[in-house]
Image (cartoon, rainbow, N blue to C red; front, side, top):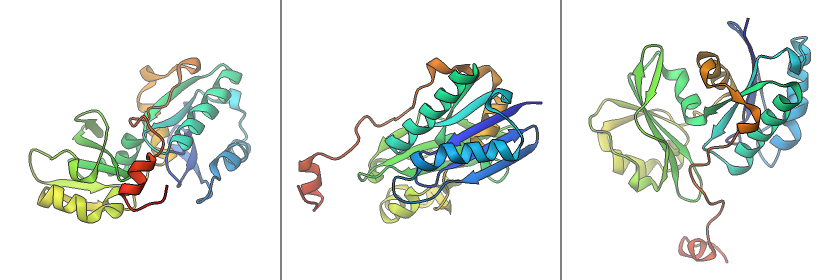
Length: 232
């Protein structure tokens, strides 16, 4: 029996999950404000108590490594690492974009994932269906909506919050090659857990856990904010 605790806080819709073989328990974290840091550990404690488990009874702790909100990605990595080090457990660092894609593996062959990265940018990754899951076609990128990668052919389905936040720009850029399937989709901890279960060879020493920011800056410069009509 494989038992996995997973954490996904790369966006404001955070979640945790506990996977034991085919059974999974999930919890959604409060939305809005800077709430994940205050709610995450109590939620984990409650979830483990519901399952009558301790951290030491887990096989691995998985986390959404990003890309996503800097604070949320750091939080997921830090909590997973801290819990794992304390219990001498490995960690599994799972792409948040792959977690976003996973629920659609039985529905579509080609999936275009685009998450709102704020600062007028988009986190984007393209996936091709392979067996029971998806194969990424390239590394995740962070680009402006009018510079997202163009698929070589049509028939793509699009999911992710960027399709709502930058609907006009993405429609103009992608044309008819991508049909929006779900513009509200976000990564979920249940998918993080399932991906970790599929990849035991990727479990690693907790000391090696690290986020994957993709973008290496937190905020716009003053000049950039002014250029977009903001205040200094």
